[in-house]
Length: 130
Image: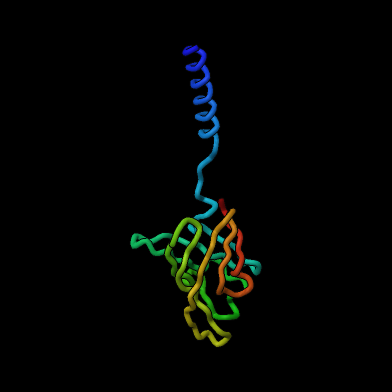
């Protein structure tokens, strides 16, 4: 009886171990670091600084040229609150080029960027260059 019990426990433990080790553990689909493309062709590349702050620079401007943004310009300054959630500031410009910084909350899930305070082509962006 004890042998049968040990066989059962061993088989059960192995099946649990095998099942759990086959599940990929990744946070990439919730990480903002990388490049993101908006609907007008703009590309924002986010990089993490030594301070922990995350900076977003415009790698391609798309429709932002008419607002006098420049390539490699910083447009985002954010920090990670928890996995997939970021808060900070996003730069806005009017057609004369006058800039303001607005608060922004960002979520990243399944390689999709969404925020609450960007224009229509940055509110939802797709990860590129994986």
